[in-house]
Image 1 (cartoon, rainbow, N blue to C red):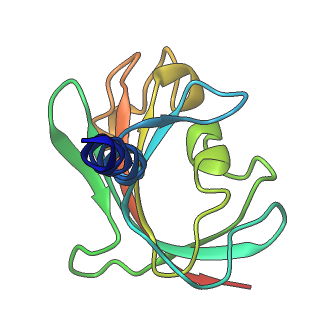
Image 2: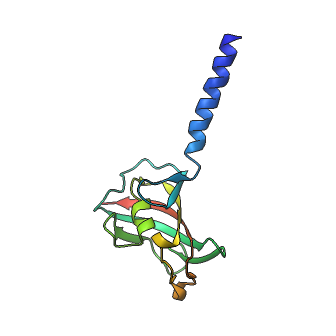
Image 3: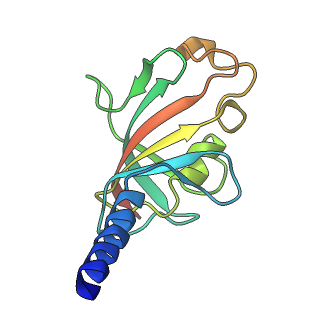
Length: 139
């Protein structure tokens, strides 16, 4: 009887740990949330490095894709991480990603394109963004 309780508790604990890797998680200091879709094992994105990623962006309210590096004629996107060169949710939300990792970010408007949106890309005022990213290279 005692060992079956231990087994059940052990199974529940390991199951919860596994689940937490694949659920939305808070990112310290910002409102953007992240979800690991596939774990990576390579070099990690850190502040100041140059990261190259595949990215697909969707407006959460409409479900409409506004950009993807995987579309014909597009190529992977490179940027300097953690220094404010891209929208805040992306800039901070990608820190810690490893090469090979796939991550989903939910970026609220105030950490994306704000109250004005980005009409040229179909992002409405106050639009919440969902980015699916794959880390390809870190230099």
